[in-house]
Image: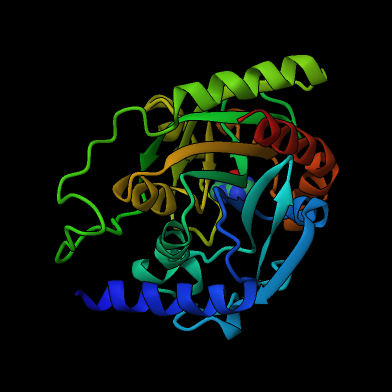
Length: 274
Ligand code: HPA
């Protein structure tokens, strides 16, 4: 057995020792300013990251850093309240480790949320974008290195990574709930600096609609281990190279907080329908 698999099993064992036979079906990652969904999870079992073997501890003050297991929309879920970013100095293995652990716990679907900059000029602040695809501009890949074939294939296919059936279902829910959604391509960068106007122009030229500092490595690992993925981005600032205004992290967090109840409603209702 590979070292990675050993670590994954140790972490999963600890979680099972706290949550019993509760087998989650769906994993959820709550992005920057989007944590309130965790509050809707019924009969929650909360496990701080620093208790879980091999889990890194989040260094970002607005990320809580705990797993929440419980029921949401009639489904058994495990939610990550706070994720790990490459810019925090973690290795690619560390930032994607929780995905493998959630897979070991039994999830079949991963729901990703994040805050990102809007490159598409048609987007407004606070818009929710269903991710249809991504571009990896992070200069790294979490699958580089020896491959453990029992975790996933050496050369995973990225076809239908953002599952079209889940996208269709989310659009249906948005229509029923009268929630405005758009769709688009997410480009992942490392950060931590926001980008130059020239970079925003370049991202737009290569086909991206939103830019952010997370999600891509997590989704690559999710695909490697056979999970279906749904990704939703909250557009927290506008990245228009010819009309650029200074970005402000407080404003970004404020916009995410404003969109949070709507995103929560969209995700909760979609999970109900899965
Ligand atoms: N760039 C990168 N990441 C981001 C941005 C941005 O403009 N906004 C929120 N996350």
